[in-house]
Amino acid sequence: MMTTVNTVVVGGGQAGLSVSHYLRQLSVDHVVLEQADKPGEAWRNHRWDSFALNTPRWQSRLPGVRYGADDPDGFMPRLEIVANLDDMAQRLPIRSRARVVSVARDAASGDYVVSIDDGENIRTRNVVVATGLYQTPKIPELGRDLAAGIRQLHSDGYRNPEQLLPGAVLVVGSAQSGAQITEELYESGRKVYLAVGRAGRTPRRYRGKDANWWFARMGHYDRTVSELPSPRAKFAGKPHISGTKGGRTINLHQFARDGVTLLGRLEAIDGGIIKLKGDLHDNLAAAGRAEVEFGKAVDSYVASNGMSAPAETLPILRDGFDQRILTELDLAATGITNVIWATGYAFDFSMVALPVTDGDGFPIQTRGVSAFPGLFFIGLPWLHNAKSGLIFGVGEDARYIADRIAARCVGAIDRRACAHVAQAHTPSAPKRSRVTTKWADRAMTLIWSSALSLMLDGFATYATGVYPTAQHNPPQADSAVVSADATQSRE
Image (cartoon, rainbow, N blue to C red; front, side):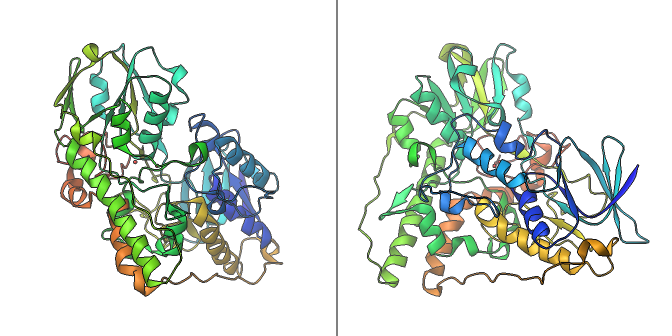
């Protein structure tokens, strides 16, 4: 069966729904195809129960959602995020249980044919791929070497401590998911071992304001992808920080003080023995440097702009450095019965039957616009700028893409679908203060890609090392797993 529509949006998460919202405003005929039962599947069924956004509410508002009175500096729990997406979706043309298996282009007409797994084909003038980057949970191949009695979960499947077997837990990965899950587990009374990567650390609040307020004020979120030290830096893990319980600072040294055993990165598993790299202290130092640079950036900004902000000295903890560096971990002797892999996600855009990805498998585009007329991408980290992968920035990118689609209505398959298209408007991006650019850039480079040199050295062999090669695996130098072929190792 062949049907026709002006635009197909593939994916019903916040990015796809945001595009749909603006297309609806512009009176562009379209449909959103979502493979799950309901939109917002990632938030609905792929986050742990106590999950809360790490961005404050003022950074977490979606276009078209009817927000009531709330706490702008608070943090949305998972169910509130789902409720907001449901509110947004009820006014949009969404088809659930519609898994797209291919997107092909008719070279003669320039139209696209979107094929769904039920056999239906949709001819369309525009396609917006909004499947995101975090598609398939990534578990290292060395996980196969664990004994059958060990319960293994990816952070994607973790819900709460009660679902685990009695006994201790090994968490592999110390970026946002791994750190937050570790905190929940040891606060529930579990003994936890944490394999630490090089993700940076930022305080939740500093000098009277949330860290994200400072990032926004200093212009960090407006940094474009061209300002990254390398295109591969967009794959770096996010810094330790938490929005749970009103927002909290996460510090691995505090974990050590509270009884968590910190470990270096995993190298191998031999029987019931885990081989560890002796880089724990180096990784802890890398996390600490990011926090120091953040403080310097804020202090410089406050001074150069004559701001009134209370002076503050960040606490210096060193408990992790006092722990002995282990090179082996005996699972039986330590009572470890569970392993949680907080090791990120693989992605795959091969359903688009066109040469649209680079050597890393990442879509080739400029602010979501590909080289193929009518083919767009959205909802990716650093699609355009630092906030593109966040709810905070998805609305701007969605409006930009919707405007480009509206501009293509001349010559559309169904001209009536675009008869009432409003005049496109592209919002201008705010400019950063030149005074603070140096400190802000230095801090952000450390925070978001603190182990970039390792990434560049080891990336070429990454895909053939620890992880399978069927899908693209973002090269995360801050991973807590060592590549089998390189000295380096995600949301």
